[in-house]
Each structure stands twice: as structure tokens, then as C-alpha cells.
Image (cartoon, rainbow, N blue to C red; front, top):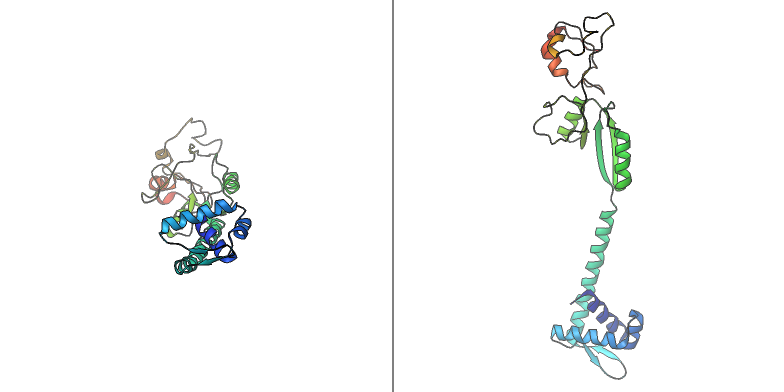
Length: 220
């Protein structure tokens, strides 16, 4: 049995006439009659009393029509509920550092919105530490952070977006000015200037630097 059979039977019951019901359904009378016969054969009962002037419902037909209206009403509500859900906006809060290396976060989020119009994205600029805490608490759905390798909490699922070297900026007359590279350990006992903790662009290697420089390291 298909919904088509139910609709055909209801049309005949409402019009009390096969020809008028067929015209309303935009099918031929012979096709409608065949569908009703197939339905009655499947149910094992006659739904209609047929005569030359009009069509009436049998006792079984009365039950079938009443239940069929309930079925079609439920189907209609189902379609409406699913359709309404498909049009709902999905809210996504993204916490991101603004200095996101080679990744154009704004453009990436705009592309995501174009491809998925149902997603309503709110982007908030934070420091990596704030973003991590926001994801942990549930205030932020997705975070984009700058961290040294292995520094993300193990309970987080993450995918690398970019990598870049860490640079130390020094005065022209500083001993490191002519060096092609230095080790983090070389910064011991030097005063460091970094973003404040929780600001929008913290140094990814800050924890390692703090272990090396100790209390002599300074923030601004």
C-alpha cells in the first residue's frame, strides 16, 4: 500500500463518484478504478458499494477512510516538521587569534557561510589561552590558536592549519643580531617582551620561554 492508494480512496469517498474523483486527481477513470481494486485486494475487503448512480462506503470503508485521514494528517505534520528543521540556523561560535599566520580566517569563514547558508557563524578574537578555555567550557565551538607543537591539551581534537618559525627581534647592536639562528636556551637571563597573557596574539613558545628565562622574563 502506498500513500497514492490512500489519497485515491479518500477522493472517491469524498466525491462519491469515480469519474469526478478521477478528474480531480488528474488520472483516467480506468486507472483510478484499477488502483482501488488493487487496494481492496491487498486489504481483503471491499471499501465501496458501487452502483450505476453513486458510490458508497462499506463498513470497512468507513473505518479505512477515518484511519486514512489520520495517516495523511500525520504525514503532513512530518513533512512540515522536517522542512522547518532543514531551514533552522545552526549557530557556530569560532574563537580565533587575529594573527593566524598564513590562514585568512575571515575569508575561510565567509567561504564556509556561502557553502552552508544555514550556519550562522560568530567569530570572536581572543588569545590562544582564552580560546582553549572557551572550547573547554563550551562557550566556543571551534578554536583557532597558535601553539607550539604538543602544547594542546590531549583531550582536544585538533588539525594543524599552518606552521611557521619563531623569531626573536633584537637591537642592531645585540649579540644575537648577527646570528643566523639561536636556541631557546640562549635566551636565558635576557629580558623578553611578549604579548600579555590572554591577549590576541600570545607567543606559542611562551611556556618554554618561561621555563628558560624564569622570573627575569618580562611581559608587556
